[in-house]
Each structure stands twice: as C-alpha cells, then as structure tokens.
Length: 508
Ligand code: NDP
Image (cartoon, rainbow, N blue to C red; front, side):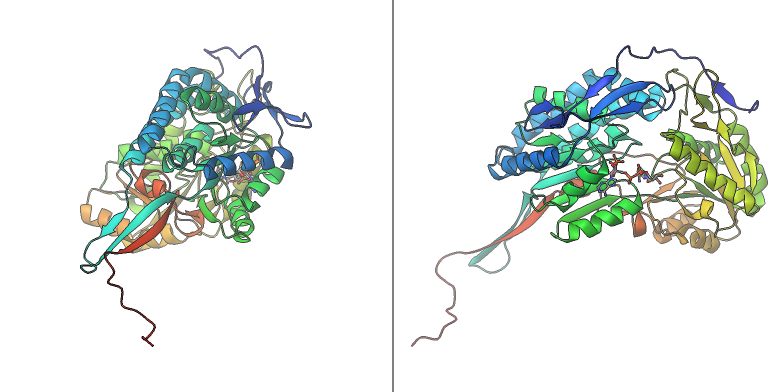
C-alpha cells in the first residue's frame, strides 16, 4: 500500500440532506403509490446520499400508458423536427447550467471522482445537441428509376414507445446515449435507471419540463429490475427496448421481449484487449493501458482489461504500467485531484477480489495491488490498482468481465497469435492496437472481432461515431446516425402515376 498514491482529504463538502428522487409520470413528479423508498449509501463516505421512490407494477403500468398515449396522439411524433430539435437543444443548455448539481450526486451515488462526473454530465450535453441535429437532417430514400409511371419512397418513422434501461457505471452518460436519440426520432419513452444511481435521471425530469417537452413523452420509473425493468421489457404496449448492462440480463431481456417480438438493442459487457507491438510509442501505450484499466475503477464496458503484449518487451512494458499504476491518484472522490474512486457496492468489490484470488490460486502472479484498499477516514469499499501476469487464456480472470481495476497480461509473438488471442473471447466490444506500422494496424483492424477498434489510442469517442458490440457484447448501435436509426422504422411507399396498372383478372 505504501507504493500507492492515495488521497484521503476532500475539497468538496457532503450535502446536508439526502436528495429525494421521485418518479416522473405523465409530466408529474411523484412518489410510489405504496410510499416505498430505497436509501442509497455513498460507496465512498458510507452515508445516505439519496432516497428514491421504489416503483412497482402500478407506476410502470402508468408510465407505459402515458408513453403510449403520447405517442399515439402525435403530440411529439408529429411535431416538426425543428420543434423537436429546439427542445433537445434547450435540454442541452440546462444540463450545462446544472453540471455541478448533477456531478455531485453522480459522484456520491457511484463513487467516481468529481472531475469525471463533471466530464460525464457536462459532456452529455453534446449528445443532446448532436441528436437535435440528427432530427433535422433525417430523411429516407426516393426511387425515381422504376419506370415512367412508378415512384417509390422509403420513409423513416419513429418506432413508437421505447423502454430505456440503464446501469450504474455511467448513469447520466448512458442515458444520454439513448434518450435524446429516441426523442429526436419522435419516439416516446419510459426510463428506468439502476436503483443504486437513480438521482441524475430523476433530476433530468425537471430539465425536460423546463425545456418544454410535452407531458407523457418521457416517463421515469425508479426501482429494481424486477418488477419495473421486467414489465418494461414484456409489456405489449412497448415497441422497443434499449438496454445497457450485464450480458446475463441482456439475454434475459431478449427472451422476455421475444414474446411480443419487440425490437431489442443491447450494449453489454466486454473483455477488451490492447495489443502492444515493440515498434510503437511505448510510453504513450503504457499510459493508455493505465488509463484504460483504472478509468471509472475499471467499471466500464470499454475497460481494457486485457493487454496482449509482444514477448520481447513484456517485462519492461509491464514494469512501466506497474510504475504508472502507483502514481494514479486513488481515493476520496470529493477531491479535485482524485482519478479513481470507490467500487459501487460491497458485493461488487467482493466479486472483483474473488477473481484475483482465484487467479492467484491457479498460479497467476500479482505485480501490484490485489487487495481491498482502505482510504484513511473513508470506508473500505476501494480496490487497489492491480496488475496480474502469469495468466493463461482459460482462466476466468482472462475471459470474464471483472469490472474492476484489474489488468491481466497475456503475451504474443506474431500478429496471427495476437489476433487469435483478441478473438478468443465471447465478447466483441472493442479492441486496440499500438504499432507504428500502418499495414499491421489495418490488418489487425480488419480481423479483430469488435464493434470499435482503436489504433494508437484508447477510448476516444465522439457523438458522430457509432458505438456497440459484436458477439455477446450486444446488438444494434448507439450514437452516430446508426444509433439514431435504431429508433426509426422503415416504411416503403409505392405510387403508380396515372391509370397505367395492368389488370390481373382477365376481361370477361
Ligand atoms: P445488471 O445488468 O443487472 O443491471 C443493469 C440494469 O438492468 C439495471 O437498471 C437493473 O436494475 C436492470 N435489470 C436487472 N434485472 C432486470 C430484468 N430482469 N429486466 C430488466 N431490467 C433488469 O447489472 P449489475 O448492476 O447487476 O452489474 C452486474 C455486472 O454487469 C457487472 O459486474 C458488470 O460485469 C456488468 N455490467 C456491465 C455494464 C456495461 O456497461 N456493459 C454496466 C453495468 C454492469 P437494478 O439493478 O436497479 O435492479
């Protein structure tokens, strides 16, 4: 522990009272009919930081009914795209005006450092603005070459009522990867955040009202996956589900939604590798590996939890990553300089630790970390920056999503071996290569089974560029024009000009 950079002080005070998060149904903020609430205890400070209404079938039914009515009467879907875009742009302005408020509660509920909460919540405004621009530029196709008397068009229409289910790791960002795009398309929505991070989603409701979103267009139900999420995915009045979270729940949702054949878009887990060749900017690569594994305490679908490093440089490269790991500022998320905060729940911290212990028991070697981290004055819900080598590709730590600050090291000799290791995974979210030879980068990029490939960088993302996974990392895409199109249905319109249609029935 003495080799780690730990910050225990804080520069921001805890709020005096817990935030009260309420449902938002048909334009009205409300508690549960039965009055039930859940307390959220801050992962870093161990005190109650929010109380959220705990929804049941009653609130979920009411929210779906409101979204269905709002879609069917066209109060949003039949507005001009200009009018929809204006509302979304106003929401973006309000997000920016409220970044400090959003960021503080995001940090208190999730345990992530305040600087990253500010980046997440403030940065989300750009997703709303980009979605607004897509609303206005969306169009279909026309076919003007089908013959002198035929004109056909392909129209795009909003898919209908969309259930949006989000996880706890980036509550406000992931919401903003989905909701503004669905709204831009003209859909109406029912949103359920994770019950451990409900507050920024609840706060957004006030901004939607202020921006002029009509009542019923976006409804928010707080509560557990069961019953709230389960009903949102099975209900016959819902046309589409978009979900981010674990692969296990994603598979369950696919089955539940199958009964009514609703469309399902899934953004799930990953076991994302960065491949390191000797002829790259090794210092930059080591920094990107350190960032890729510790950002959001590794609780990130895009976490680069595996490195596949060339044997010739493996020892030196791992030593550099270990040295950098000791310099990353772990600790109190309410300090401006902290880079890595707390683990979301005690159960999750135990799960992370379990992976490391199992790997060690199977013969792996811990180069740094490998245990719970106690930050003086705060609880023990932190985990040390951890690098594990001597790992074989069959170990659970090398195959499963640990979702913690735990990096595993594998090695290769040839490009084919690196690609085989990259693709030896049930997941296919993202992959990266560090190499100065453009031909090697291109070969890798084309053969890696992943929704995103980064070359000589990691986790650079933009609202314009689609995001999503292949294999068991998901289906469908988010953000970019591809993500927007997920919320649109396609309708073909075929028109005959004049009375030129040849009769099918022979004249009597
Ligand atoms: P889950 O997949 O359980 O949770 C994600 C969301 O789904 C939450 O809002 C949850 O509600 C909801 N949910 C749970 N069960 C159902 C259901 N039957 N129907 C509809 N919605 C449901 O993730 P966990 O929070 O349990 O995390 C477990 C693991 O998942 C992590 O260790 C990590 O490996 C992975 N994960 C991956 C993420 C990613 O970004 N790809 C994000 C989060 C987790 P609630 O929890 O409120 O009950």
